[in-house]
Amino acid sequence: SQQGEEDPQALSIQEGENATMNCSYKTSINNLQWYRQNSGRGLVHLILIRSNEREKHSGRLRVTLDTSKKSSSLLITASRAADTASYFCATEEPGTYKYIFGTGTRLKVLA
Amino acid sequence: NAGVTQTPKFQVLKTGQSMTLQCAQDMNHNSMYWYRQDPGMGLRLIYYSASEGTTDKGEVPNGYNVSRLNKREFSLRLESAAPSQTSVYFCASSERPSGEKLFFGSGTQLSVL
Image (cartoon, rainbow over all chains, first blue to last red):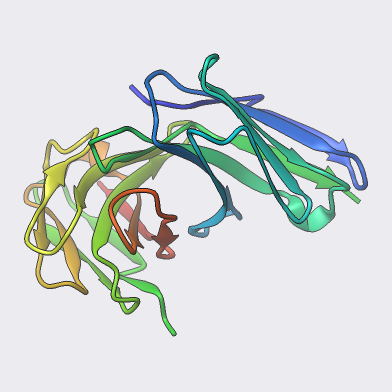
């Protein structure tokens, strides 16, 4: 079974609004990463947050990590039509060198 | 700088045929990965190679074999293709096996009839 579950599965917002998507996972982790996938293409890395970090920012992206709840959230502020994509979280389990992906959130930003 | 290159981009096989998906990276990365992506399932790890000379099973290794040919190349072989292996296959690499971001290829769309 997959480690991460993203919520919601799909999200549709207007340009300029903020988009929040959540990831829950099952086991302890070394770090958690977020990736974006445009339709039919490979994934692109967005941000990595380590297990001892609680929040991280990169441009319009803000990621939080709550290891006690085994959850993370990705906030995209002031969304643009170009942010339309699927977003995936990926976790690295300690001692395994495995990066396990969640099922993804499909974001649609309407112009 | 090409990054991660996968060949072929598209392939159609008949049940029982074999084929090898090729992956090469030019970033001098130590670790390489093979994932498959099915609708609604996200990406699932098939095999990975933490460093040259090592390979390990991921979440869904059955029906596949891999070869880490050298530091640059990591191939995925389907010995006897089945319709359940119809999927999009992604190769990825990272500088080190732990704590690093993954760089992905553009994928191979495989259909098994």
